[in-house]
Image 1 (tube, rainbow, N blue to C red):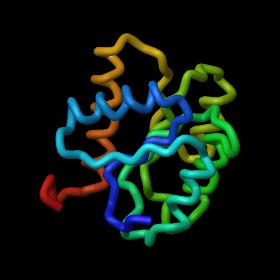
Image 2 (cartoon, one colour):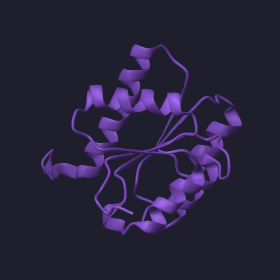
Image 3 (cartoon, rainbow, N blue to C red):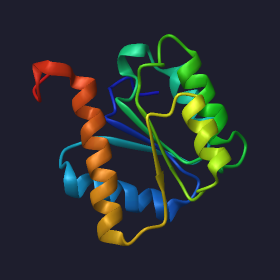
Image 4 (cartoon, rainbow, N blue to C red):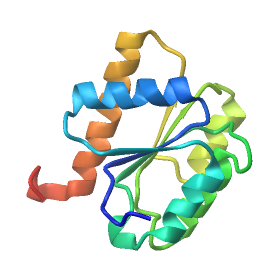
Length: 144
């Protein structure tokens, strides 16, 4: 597995949704690196195969996926000292109050419900990722 640091890890089993997310991010933050995986098992493998220094800066995570769902990915990311500081933005079609509450109780940093109108989606995803990337880079600024 490549050990270079990815800005945003996108975990979504819907290829069309993942493509929209990548497009939205590239429109808002050109030059940002993204990595798309199709299920929770692939996401977990990313953390097992990379050193902590190569962990993604932000995770955009769907909840309803085959093999391993987003809740389990969130549980593992936030339960591991090496990865718990990575911001996780839940990006899912579930607006169920129980899912929102569980995601936040497991450590989600943001929760965005899809679908939404494309321009709104592009703006929302870009804004959320930009916010968490800035937080990750800290006060030293953009070049860090």
